[in-house]
Amino acid sequence: MKNAVMGVGLKPLTLLALFREHNEEFKKRVGIDRIQETYDSYLRSYKHLSAFIREKKGVEDVTLRSLDRVFYDDFEIFLRTDRNLKPKSVHEHLYRLKKLTMRAVSQGTLRRDPYCRLHPELPKRKSRHMKLEDLKTLMTTPVEKPQLQFVRDMFLFSTFTGLAYADLKRLKTSDITQSEDGAWWIHIRRQKTDTLSSVRLLDIPLRIIEKYRNQRQGDNVFNVYRRGYF
Image 1: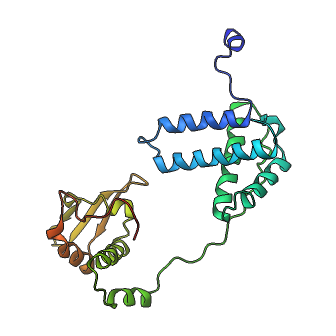
Image 2: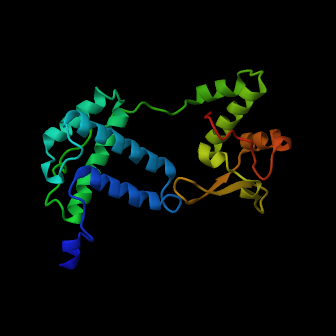
Image 3: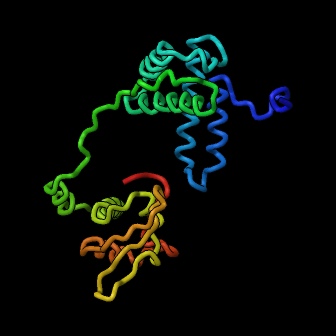
């Protein structure tokens, strides 16, 4: 009763206050079991939702109990028109709105989730798989500039090993070992999933490693640029 009178331990009753609480908790876990990029994306969602409430509803915040289908649909239209976001981004922000109402239910501030039966429409995904013919063309097309050769080689190395860009740029010489049968392996803990991955090195990635051996700086296998993509 004392806590209730003093406001200690009370859960947020408004949407943006609940979102701020979520983000503050998430921030404390960055570097432990959460990553900065995801935290930044939650901040973007908060920014869009805050702007929508202020510009379209004319208030600084709304109560959780006032959330209904109209609010959801209006927010979706706002994202698509006023913010001119792509379908994938719209889906992402609507999903986070749903996550907040689920959080409110779990905290007991809402009896039921007003959006439990709503599922943000996922945009149709185009195939991102490279055909074998395309890969062969990429490998055999002459490239004169060393910088472009490096970009192509890093792409090929990732293709043949399955390593993501984040894993490739932090790949160390100590991550590569040779087994008793003479085969070379990469043993690396993946950044995104924090799981150990073992990849056997085939001839092409081995040749790429050897090609850039003399250009190493420190323990990194490749001098991958810290900014930019291949």
